[in-house]
Length: 232
Ligand code: ADE
Image (cartoon, rainbow, N blue to C red; front, side, top):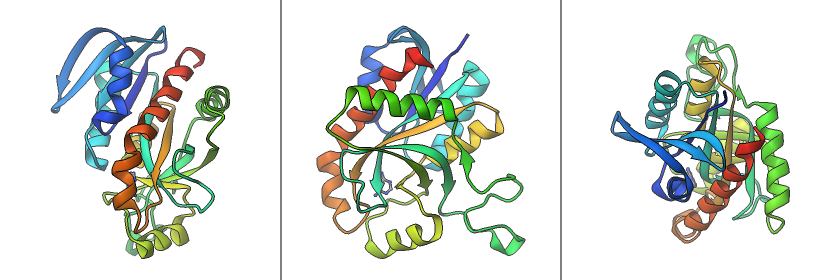
């Protein structure tokens, strides 16, 4: 039977889903609360991982080990890396990589985890397709994009940092957890997708925009996840 692990880093990214879940039990592990039950008629586990790549990786591994999830969805907000991707728009991952990984000295590409066997961790095509279809059904006011999501332990709010990431990785948006969840899912052979709504443009305006748009963007991404669940 399918069981969907849903990870959001911040409270705003999971609170709506937690409120709508028919919860059976809560388990605490690694200072995270895993809420298990049914959401939109689908068996699921919802968890707030906390911010950053280490939290996200620990969280994804617990979902695999303790809850035996069959799929993982990461929901949340991100900074846009493309002029045409505006605040409120949705990005669905085709793949994800660490923009702050640099082990080129041992002969791998910039961003590549040595011995991982790939530069970017590929998202599940079925989950990607469902996310796009569902988004088109429930939200016609905002655009949806499919592309690479890049992650690092940095909030990007500087034009030059943003330009470097774009030049190096051709990402659609930047955030702080997705690639770790992708890597954990990849290592555990669990299909995953990252869904992010844009809260800022990852440049000098990000510091001002993020607090203004983060809540609404987080809710939009979560609504899409809820809609997708029964179709997985
Ligand atoms: N999450 C939302 N906006 C972000 C940004 N600009 N950088 C990193 N993570 C983010």
